[in-house]
Length: 370
Image (cartoon, rainbow, N blue to C red):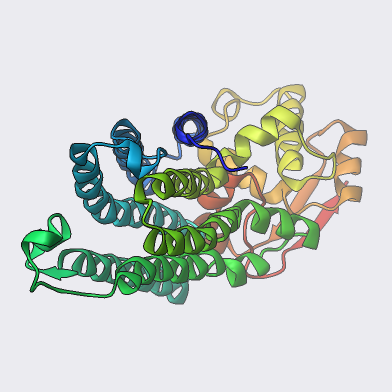
């Protein structure tokens, strides 16, 4: 049997979802600042923090005016306020989606320096903006005059678009951009020089947002009910739950790649992980330098040198790492690696953010001499 009052359930679900989404933003910023990799996409994440807070406030306002209760239990003032805030939500909801998608796309600019890929990213940004403007135009031009939206009885001759068009088209456009954004980095990730298992792990982190698409598809059914069912306030209680889950899943998906380094530190990774191998090799190099009694100017490695050592270690095979272990990283071990330095350097920033080895455009060849 359906609940007669959805408000307690709605309050609980949207509050928990908002808490998870907000925590993911703060953790993202912590990870980026800790690893000194703060970028423009993180600026968009800060903007998203405030935008998401305003979206949550609108949902609470809906509940304050009686959404989740049956319309027959509400006063005319409450019903009027719900109608007004429903229009506000239509407009602001599009801006929330635009902000989330821009944060995704800004992050993608770190993924690869390839010109064609970056053009696709900027093109998707333009498409996202175009769809948002289209949705706003639908909202503002759905009735002429605009006042007919709020007081239809006062404008019997008003010209209004179909409710199905006004409600379904924006959701459809959002799903289209979601799918484009989720599939955009797949070809680039597939070119990573790593095992298929790790490629799947990267794609799993980046495609977590697919759950948001699934939730958006559920939104179609709730919108259909909202159009057909005269009990608007009660159906809006369901819509609030779906909208909150959809938005917060998307927020977590935006921040998840940046949190990969935090998860790696908490749960660790396998001994064969090339990222961990990078740290181990750095330790061997430091130990070897100390054992050999380096000169004063050679006793400290610059940050650039450490990055080079990490890039070299990411290309070592298991047998070469074992050789380093057996010798204790002494100075008589020489590792020579042929790499595409430009490609390594351009991609190292992104891969450091998500805790995976760098993209290598040419297969490196390693040679170890004892």
